[in-house]
Length: 461
Image (cartoon, rainbow, N blue to C red; front, side):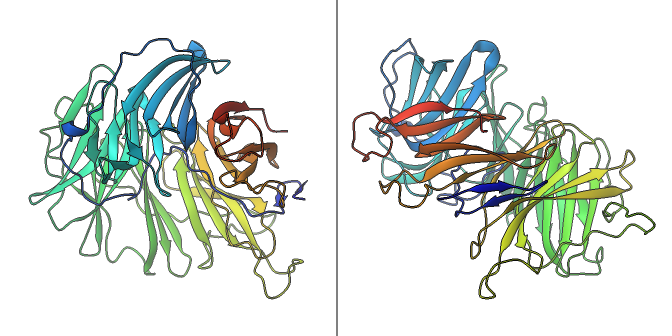
């Protein structure tokens, strides 16, 4: 049986931890690499949204947002009969309205469904035998878009490449509605990456060992015409070590850049709002020990960055989730390499000229388990980490029921919380509250009556 033992700041997990995908701010390439034109021929018949009492049965491809003020939970997902829908539920999960966005959708192992502001839904899979990343919304035909996309400013932005170069396209459904393409931000040969915050779209361009950033405000009146000047944030002679990884992390109205060298050197800098040059590179330091000088923070070569995130407000901390080897002296056999997951919190000083880092172990994995794929979200100042644990032992061998528990931790409290549940999929609504796709018979076959139902998972204990 899987058990969790709590230490002052560490959770010991005795089962392999499985990932169930949910929405996140940035998306990677999950389908065909180039966008196709809008596909009006794939438009499905859409009935107007109206109250409905029929239960909607979902596959494991779902995403959800809670709207506590309105007493609503919105769920986007793929139904058992291959429709992509957006459903409004009340607090008791009774259907208030159903919006059909597409029919004949074929999901695959890599399919993800993401619910975005204003009722926009992004899903990658097949429509009309065409595998693409699709932008779906009520009253419009499914629209093929680039798999390089992110959420920003109450809408969705994605990279658009053509013979002339690289642009950004932005769609927002909520008033004022926007559907616009930016001017060129990169040459046809540019190696371009896309990142977003709530107010910024940032395109980073890699050219001749330099990293350049272009900042765009998608809701600005001149979004389609402005020609922003790329700003260099990394040059070939900036660091003594070769680059292992460079992370561009927009936050509020500024951008943080995190450099990790091959030998473990770490440095950071900021591109402030309205500034045409970044702050100098700074090296984060570890907390000072009594009577000893502060030490620079170093990130070992054996460590593996899982995800980075940032506080929602400017000047807030940055967070990095890492899988890394346990310190020597553990109880695992020599033939295995025990792994732990660690959360790092980087804080800048007010001037952006100094930074410190707090290290917190989150999970110690069982002997022989390589990694924990987890979700990292942040609010104004706190990071929330959550993941799922597989079904205990052989207590349920039914295909598709791979989740036996939900676990979560946060940067502002020790330990972790666990909620036992048998589910096909889980998505986070808010701290301590989750939505799960379950089968009414518990450990039941896929075809059993009542499969694909939704429940709100209880607060973890």
